[in-house]
Length: 270
Image (cartoon, rainbow, N blue to C red):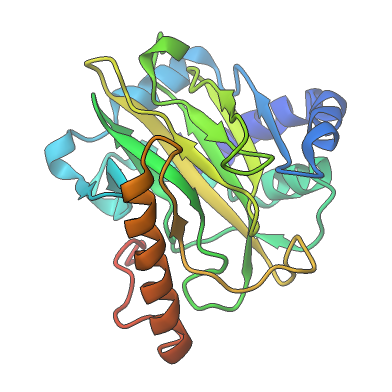
């Protein structure tokens, strides 16, 4: 199925639920704005997308203090449907209606899938609280929206692997958004949009299609350039200190080397 066909499904669902989604987003926009929509695609298509996900050994493992997960972004190495569904979220009319729901102007997709693509998480995988890198790969546009589309059938909240957002900071309780099958979550990204993924507890793989949208303008007037910034949870005091040191070192390097010491490999090389 071509991305334009999949994009039509996405657009229709967003358009039919537009007012409800706008209301949902407005209630949260003063902190971390977000909305989610279930049954995004026809069930048979969502199942097919899940079934096309690559085996873990064909992905890139990321394991350190900050995260433990698997990613895939060189999309021509995988099943064609996976590339089509990723870029369906970058169809012009999909970007336009998401922008309208979030009351944003001049929003752009990312053909290079910088930090986007596919995400796979198995038992004991996790993603610590963090802020996404503030810009695109060329440091020209601001990252403003994170789109997460979950496709693992029969995934329950007690399985873990759920999105967590921290609208009042890391010292206050997080909001849990279940990684439910066929659910799209859209959240804002700025210098206060702390989010994480809880540890996967089930011996299964949670699959997600990830996209970012960018803009010429930041979401918050006080936004400043920052690297991807990780913190420890309240129960991880030693890890939190180590991660803050790591954040400071990487931020210092980026002041000297504007695009980093080396090119970030997490991008689609066409």
